[in-house]
Image 1 (cartoon, rainbow over the protein chains, first blue to last red):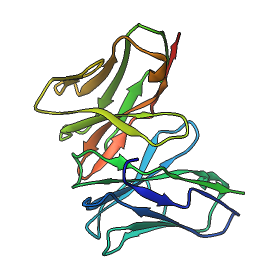
Image 2 (image 1 turned 90 degrees about the vertical axis):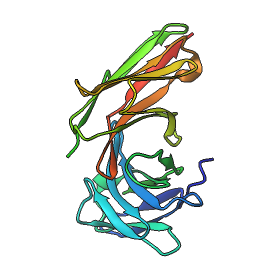
Image 3 (image 1 turned 120 degrees about the vertical axis):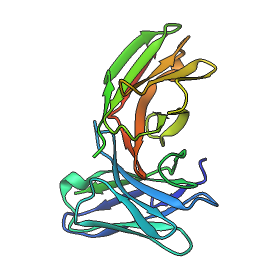
Image 4 (image 1 turned 135 degrees about the vertical axis):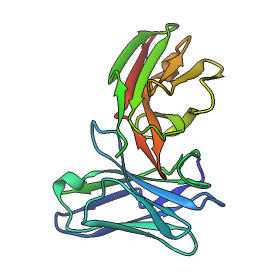
Length: 113
Length: 110
């Protein structure tokens, strides 16, 4: 157990819908990262927050957005869902940013039908 | 942005043999290079990392080497065991983010 929690574990929804994925970082970690992992794909970096502020953006679609709240938990919002958005979404946390070990949560498996 | 290339994509070795996975990166400012292991259906977990001020780091059967001039780093697993079978990801930092390679699926056969 890494100390990072993610909910829900599984999510099944339909195209066009909107979902919210939630992540709680390890106690004391200020940075939260979101990744998308599709079949046969590596870990695609989406976005990073540090102490409530956006710090880095990767290959995140405009239909996706995220935020980090004062209690440091983070939410990833996915809207106008498409079949291709079906993937495993991981959240990770670290003490600071960039060059520190990232601890991954168990992931949320999203299936868009 | 930062590009991390990883090879091979699949690797099959016999138990007891060594396995080597290689990665290259493009951002000359990268100074942190972790390796993650992901077992089927589980989260990625850090197995070893190296920073740019050292050229090699070892932890029991696992070692990582870094060549900053050539911008490549490698993972070496010696005396492989069936439980080493997993997908391995290399990564390099770029600014505040970590960019991952596409992964190497390692199979260790008894």
